[in-house]
Image 1 (cartoon, rainbow, N blue to C red):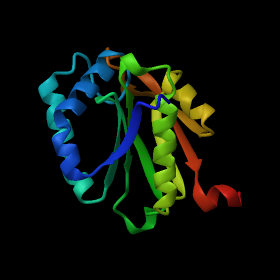
Image 2: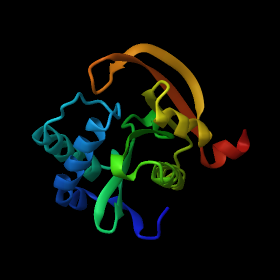
Image 3: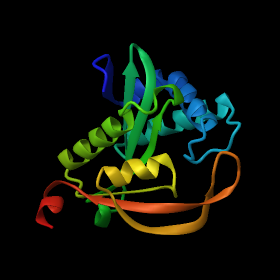
Length: 181
């Protein structure tokens, strides 16, 4: 990662202050072809509203968000979603790993992924899971980072162009659970 790039956690107030930039990142990511739950063309107002809705989850501790900036410009983000049920507090879902199309191919995805994994382990999480479009560049990132493929669900989600695509489910044991076996 370039020394001019920083990755920081966003508390609810910082997320609210960054909504405009986060919305721009979301729109650019979707328009760049990333399958992250939105169809193209994604309207900026929809992206702004979506990020505003995340603030309450961050304030409640159900969502953790990190933002990557390069020379003052928001170029990436990743989040962890924490379950609210007592029998699942040992796990979290990795969600919305985004790197701006202009910043791809420079290792930022790996950095964001590692930061989320480290923070999850530090908070006592021992199991992470995620889903991603099968055969995508994101899937290659997760495999290279040691995530385990659990299976594929056909026609699970539409990509930004609206085409139904298979989704691969991954998991990764972290912290003491990873060392134990």
